[in-house]
Image (cartoon, rainbow, N blue to C red; front, top):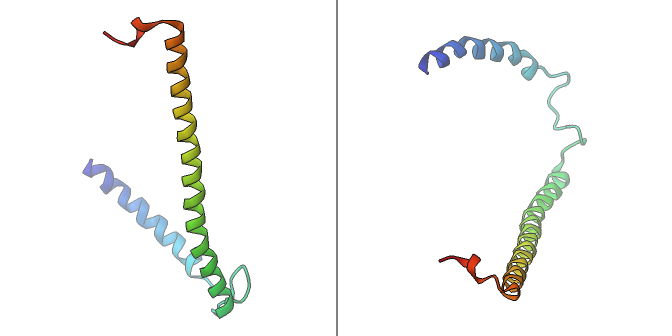
Length: 95
């Protein structure tokens, strides 16, 4: 196991050395401008507010979805027990 890690070490180091110039290359001086545009205080603040609002809303939506699915599962369980009881198949319930 240690031999595999030692064998992978030169390959990993070579890949890092080959990728370093591309990662460090800049075409323009660093000015705070990204793919969106200039990242001034307003843009950063609004992005932070969006992130702050996203996570509670995501948790709320996922919790409501889980609640509905659990409610559905419980209803199906009750319906299947009623169906078994109506069929009179009491021997299938265990000892």
